[in-house]
Amino acid sequence: MSVSGDTAKGRLAIIAGNGLLPAYVAQAARAAGDEPFVISLKGEVDRSWQGYDHAVIGVGDVSALEGIFSKHDIRRVVMSGGVRRRPEWREIRPTWKSIVKIPSVVRTLISGGDDTVLQMVIKLIENNGRRVIGAQEIAPDLLASVGSLGAVAPGKDDISDMLKAAEAANALGLLDVGQGAVSVGGRVVALEGPEGTDGMLERVASLRNAGRISARRKGVLVKLCKPQQDLRADLPSIGVSTIVNAQKAGLAGVAVEAGRALILERDEMIAAADQAGLFVCGIDRGLPGWGLT
Image 1 (cartoon, rainbow, N blue to C red):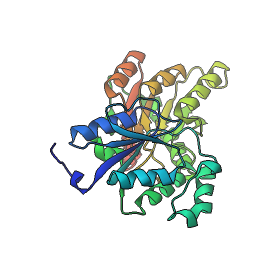
Image 2 (image 1 turned 60 degrees about the vertical axis):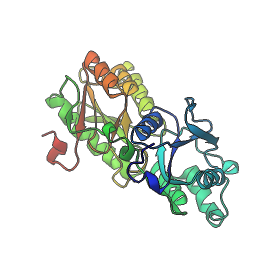
Image 3 (image 1 turned 180 degrees about the vertical axis):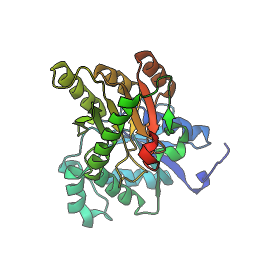
Image 4 (image 1 turned 90 degrees about the horizontal axis):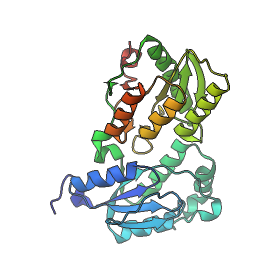
């Protein structure tokens, strides 16, 4: 087997939560000449990893994680996929090196914001000379680009809603709460919380059905990276389910941050958006008016 990039510097491990992203990363790694070791999180794994070297550990089992790293000469680590449940303090099993930090580790894992938790986990992994890398470094084709991705383009009212939702999502991210916001008719009607994007969109659909949101204006979902976010973990992502739920919520479309958000099931997602008459586009915080005006 050929060795590419920095594969020779040690084996790649994929810490896999739920969702499609871990599978995309594993496939891209193999295509690049890597043979990844998959570490799936107990209670989160929703697919079989047969065909890959793999193991299952508890979400808070730092000791088991370190044992796998040492046994299989893991030097690079990708964190991918969702984690629905925080570990209870009884489930947190530290290494001897991290035992002195256990009060702060437990406190962060149980009550910290998502970005705070991820930064702490990255520090624990990198304490022993390993390197955490982003999923986009393994699978760069997943990154969103600026502009419309499908056949439908946003109109003037949609752009106004995108700007309002982007402002709200950015403020929400600064609080380390969530990555998404929905604006309808220039009014922010939903902010993403622990329920995730699909849960937020279900809430918007309920509000619209109850007459709490205008039936005359459609609205837009915007997902952004948190301004302070470590780009090596938990980039915003959208897929077919996002489009399905955006349609149920009566929205006109979805916008994500170009270069800092992932598009999963790209072809299927664009086809679903086109069929539903929804736009999907990438916006850039580094451009005037997010590249929309």
